[in-house]
Image 1 (cartoon, rainbow, N blue to C red):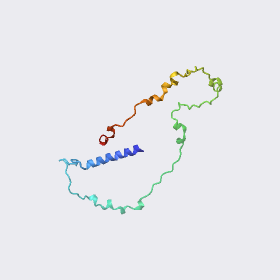
Image 2 (tube, rainbow, N blue to C red; image 1 turned 135 degrees about the vertical axis):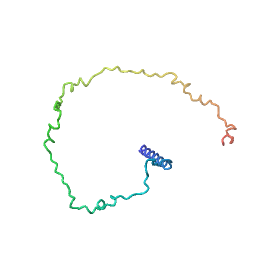
Image 3 (tube, one colour; image 1 turned 180 degrees about the vertical axis):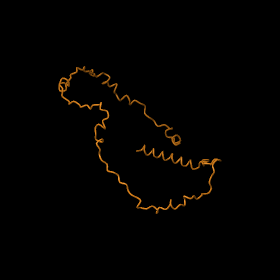
Image 4 (cartoon, one colour; image 1 turned 135 degrees about the horizontal axis):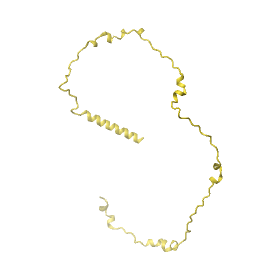
Length: 161
């Protein structure tokens, strides 16, 4: 939906640009060549004022008659197989009926026992470092120096730029 709306908007925008650009185009007017004469006045010709051409009342309604079409009928050639089967060298095949065969119902066919080699993982062992207090002792982390507040941290000139 978004794509359709975007495409429609883009197409409209491009069309608008083309219209606006062609309004102010200069030098696009057609100029007659020196070989052509440009008519400046209209001339009335005889056929333009002829009553026989323009008088629609002169046609008699009695002269107008509606044609009727003949009814459509099915003819022999329309339903003849000889007409429509032009290439008689092809013979339509009929499929044989499906039958159950022994292999389809044989349990040995479908219940195959493949002897797969099962992969075994080594058992996990608990090592010394996993249970050592030295490795996991959290108290060692508390030996850091304490944080102190320094003057530059409280100076407003450094923080208010």
